[in-house]
Image (cartoon, rainbow, N blue to C red; front, top):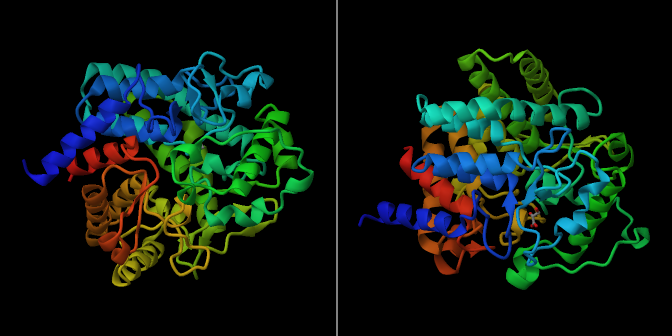
Length: 438
Ligand code: DGY
């Protein structure tokens, strides 16, 4: 069997292993439920060879949607599974009358990938009646989800939504959050007692620190006090960020909803209004010419982040940069390649806070490479797109289906550069989609 065919078969068996009743877990024990953006990427993988599984994946996520439109970051399809913290009882979403209770869920969201995931399914099967019916069914629910972001998370009504928990960003312990998290007065926080589960399963050196977990629990409790929505969060939270990735993904998904709407004659006026304002503000407020990327904006401290990190690159995927900006972003990647890095590391490799092993403080992430690959292709940056894809496939080939990977070439060649959980679903689905759609 040729190596790519073999990799493809292994990827499919990872998804098969993680498949549960109508949804796929990211990885057993470490993440034993359904995660929002993980499932989006899983659906993209399945769409290549199993339409039912691709549809079920999205449908299972929609089953946890709240009345206010939020699609939570975790859907706890099982109430007895106990290898994960914080579990459904710790979230206690009964504080919000419109929260889903069957299934139980968390109280925050994640990068809103579902719009472009739905479009991807339709593009792969444009004439399949089952797909068309499902797209028509899911479309208004995803519009309602975007409405949640613009209604509850755009405090200034400027078209850029905020997050109040690092878990919402998907990039839990990125150094970009450090300054904001340092505002939290943990000594006087009176945190509830809790026990981490993740470090029993994964190497503690590759996971967030104890202090960071205290901060995560603190912000969870803050959200709970404010019914996980409402003005109170924007008024009280020390952590209040207009994140580059969240907003770029929302913009990319808005575009997908507009495209779907145009095909079926749905009313997309509201989405188009959001989209215009969001793209304009993203460019005006988040571009940093010196860093050659977009950065997040800290609403509490009224300042832009002073760091290069991977979230900004997803703007390419959302078609936001002009030719000049896109070229600068590409040059940054070439510089990394020349300096013997596999791309794309998640944080500035020259910064003292870069940590090549620890979760979002340096490693390469599969789903990020998937989005950046498509972004670079949109701008016809073929060489860089190929590098993003080939580097990722090389890492999986060498180390297996890990959650994240080493970026320094000399370490990739001499040590085990596969980090976090193994047999990871979005690694498998990214492999499948990249191999089958050259
Ligand atoms: C975790 O538990 O590590 C997740 O990233 C939060 O959802």
